[in-house]
Image (cartoon, rainbow, N blue to C red):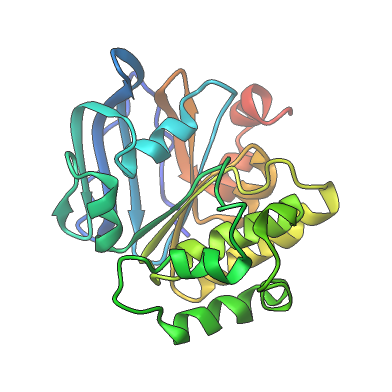
Length: 253
């Protein structure tokens, strides 16, 4: 955890240079068509790190995730992943580099079975890696129990586990999670975060956008607070939780 990280604000922040960054986003302007959502955004994730992006609704959090995965109009700035410049790389090529993405909505093939969904996660390979499939089933035992069930008949929490499992079939170095607790019953939220913790503990770096900011910041190594499409604060997760200004403005006190 980065205890010496200093909070940064949009007006006076200094660009960080971390030679060991797995993902480095620099001065990113991005949006949809001609509509710009992000302005001058910086973000880093190091190998094995757990990073969370929080902020008010409409701050551009999901746009950051989509931009990293090549799903927006990236207007300016640079993105590098595992030493490769991915600023103009499309999603179908990014996935080959070791980056997995789980969107918030429409993240499973509802007409396919659980196992067929997982096999689709390895579609770029010549054959389904059985060791990766077994690892996913070990992480999410309910998926093994329901491997023949049609995904569209599963609960929201089970679908979310399936979507994560499918993204893990290629054993990515970095997993992007967009609002993984959205729509889950309160008693399932902690369980979902526990599963994400274990994925990170096993060596997969995680970059997560999350509406449940307090729970997310308690678990992550570092956090970013995004406001109006710009960096507002960056610090260790527990430091952001302890910052009175951050708590008052963004975490409900």
